[in-house]
Amino acid sequence: MTLQWTAVALFLYAEIVVNLILCIPFISPKRWRSVFNWRIWSWLSPYWNKFFFAMIMALIILFLDAVREVQKYSGPEPMQDAKANPNVYDHVHMKLFRSQRNLYICGFSLFLWLIMRRVVTLLNQAAVVLEDRAGLQAQVEHAVKAAKQHKEDNLMLKQVRMKDHISTKQQMKLEAEKLAGQLKAAEDALRKSQAEVEAMRRQAKGLAQEYDRLLSEHHQLQNLQRTEDKKDQ
Image (cartoon, rainbow, N blue to C red; front, side, top):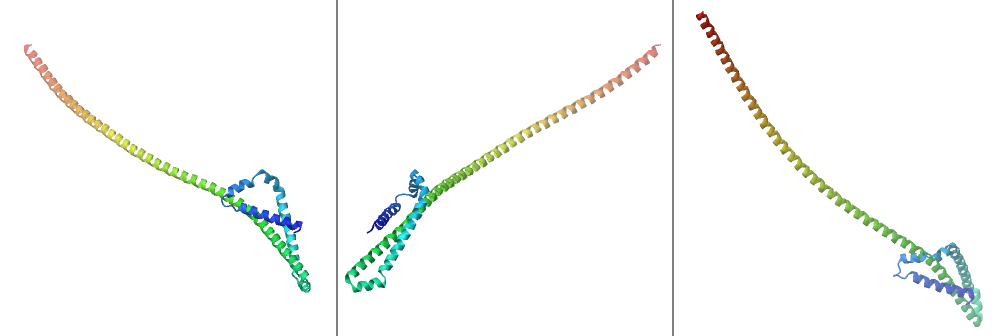
């Protein structure tokens, strides 16, 4: 195996290991997101896209070269030479086998390179979704708690208003009873005052009649005295 295909094979093995690590089920996306947020990745981020596309171009070139080699050694001309010479036959099949091997190595490397990029993207998106879901769940719990508190406050307010209404009604009833008592007392006092006034009016009328009688008697006595004085003269 030449140096370039050895490097591609090592790159394929590294991709397999990395993809297996990324697919470990007990490592959550949040933990992977925290790993991806390390400072070293921020340092490498300006070169990451360039490196990614450079590797894609290199793997595509190697893949096309491997396809060309496979077509070269699987064509009719090498097979005719191989049939003519048994040693050439083994050599052609060996070259074909190596070309096919290189094709598979390069193809799987390109495939896993794209898969690894996609897995990293999905892990980041899953971590963001989990964080958003946690935030939404906290908001929902807060909203439910606020709604329950609001409901309890409304219930307490209704109870307080009902108590205030009852107490106000009782207070108004007591005040009405008090006013009714005061009105009854005032009516009794008025009735008593009217009775006293009537008694005083009757007494005044009696005194006036007595005064008129005494005045009449006084006039009669004066007339009688004048009559007697005339007789004496």
